[in-house]
Image (tube, rainbow, N blue to C red):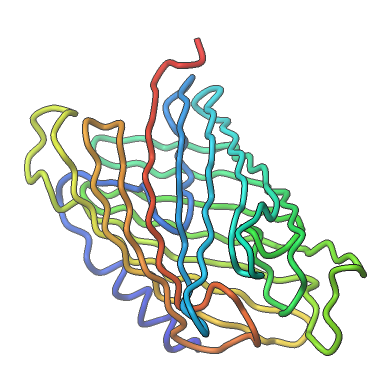
Length: 270
């Protein structure tokens, strides 16, 4: 697997080109925050094909209190256990503690934490805090903006909260995982910025992985995506993640598409 990771790093770091950039990744969060005093609303749909189609819907509210601190709240609804129902929710907070800004480039670092609850039965040692598991996560994210290219790296620790009432006999149980990612985003259009009302078209490629430190079980996903941004306020994402290496038995978000709409309201928290 180390050869695969090295190859991906070479690709991500070798395609830098002059221009502007976007870092609004589809499957991960950057170190940067929303503009201060802003409100954001998201609606995400995830689809999985496994013995039939299963869907998860994630409504989300995002609040940016200042340039360094923002909070997200999510709810999870799906039909993955039969009837469409509310599964649980989560709260996420990120604090940007470093910002080195230059003309057409910057480097930023942030620390984040997440608490999630879910009433789904436990089928796998994988930990997914967006609907499948109750647990906690804490990590560090760094993002480098280089004109039109944005690169980001993420490392976190995840701990599952396991209730005996949710255990499924004979199935592996989640405990703890190390999660990591490498993300790249490139601004395709506009070629030259004239104003912030111009539509943006961005392409993304993300590498998402997890490792169980207890037994070494791990997997690595590739996740290409495209994005359109209108008037700097409205965003539409379309992405697909698929397993490229390794594997953990029974994981639910293997080979999953994602569709998202996001609406931002600046200075809404005055």
